[in-house]
Image (cartoon, rainbow, N blue to C red):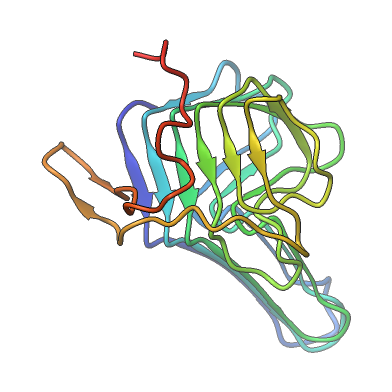
Length: 193
């Protein structure tokens, strides 16, 4: 996926009876098992929502922007994942990974990217197996580990990426420009082309 904007999408699940719990994953995009060699390059995932509502059992929501459950390891290169949201309404709700959500052993490699400013009750931008290849800004990770070139916030001390609104900036797709005081300025890999 090259130079694309994935925006304003909704994954929604409702349960009004005694059925199974409502589960919504991947408001912007869902990469399921069996997908191989998925690479997202120079793209934006923004303004997407994953919403689950349940009357009887706990609703589950993961990955407001992207849900990645692929057997192979997807890559995010020069990506912006921001302003995505997870919402779970009902008894014992689970809502996590407002930007990126992954189950169990799934992994994603992230390089030269911004994953921050997403919205969810657990205040994390990504959950699951993040493999940082460096030069990333993570607004909030529950498990803060990464590359020495990364900027990593936590739920108690998040980093605001300080981004403009999503708009056309002269290129073929909408994107978020950096504000003048963004911590992402000059933080990317200078060798990246």
